[in-house]
Length: 438
Image (spheres, helix red, strand yellow):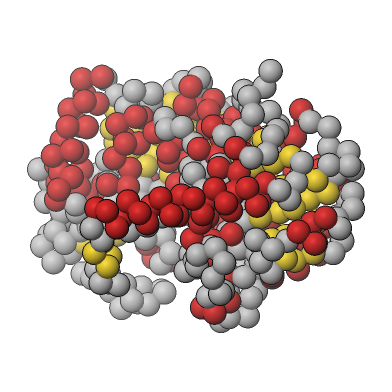
């Protein structure tokens, strides 16, 4: 990695403003209970290092998708459900010290200036302000908003100015900026990228460094055979990834809902399965491109199909069967079958680099989890056989954890969208903004 990290700076007596990813899942009962603290635990090495080196910390993060307000406006009462206060309490317990919670990320001067070496403050959700992402819609059917070109340009300019103002304020809280939030590194937000224009040095934390190292090595210098596995619902979510990977992998495995669009492109009947008809031509193009490059694209050869999408957790309300080839009308594919699991496992047997993003089916329903968990088992053997296995964020991470195989993977990424954009070969704003090593 050619960017400075925490190891490259003297932290003693310095105040570090650190962007972390505390976008943790919360219980839906409104209790504020954190149901999975993986992202908090992942940030601990960088946090503890700063404190051990004699620095103090100002942490900032987003949580969920609150409705942001303009700078200077009254807080949105609907945002109470997105407070980071429970995270401050959980982090306090893990560190064994009080984490001072600041209820407004734009009004933290007094708390920040009072911080002593070894102390930590956590700012309230940065997305409580629109200036964090600076997004504005020209047309919003739900809200009945239709802006003229002039109005749209004025709104964008206004929010851009506010994003700069917010970035400067956040930068004023510290002597050093550290980005350790890979999950938002693909966003050019105030707290992830723009802030680096107003505080130097801007360095990487250990989690971000690890993510870039694993994914970078996989993309730029993979040990072969290199196998990528893509799943999830839509082809359109991974258009650029498929195209980019065809220049890098030896084998591309495609499962999940996106596989049915590819199967339709092959002339196979898919019944009522999920399909993006406007992407069929693209899938034909990718299949032809793979054949021309000598790249194997593996699609499911059998599928678990159902007469409708399940409405109960145990899927007891549906009828299921496994079929090869065409899927009958009135039925939909919801998981890959055992022959597909065996086919994919065979392709993974000798792999030395594997990147996996997206489940093979609706694994959240127990009867439809066998395909995803079967692939989990196969990917878990890669590390044991001396290879590298990388789980690329999102639902894949959830599946790997639920399967009990997370510890058997080389690296489980904390960023879904960020890992996808990295695999596409895109520059991540949150990484590009960091200070280059001399």
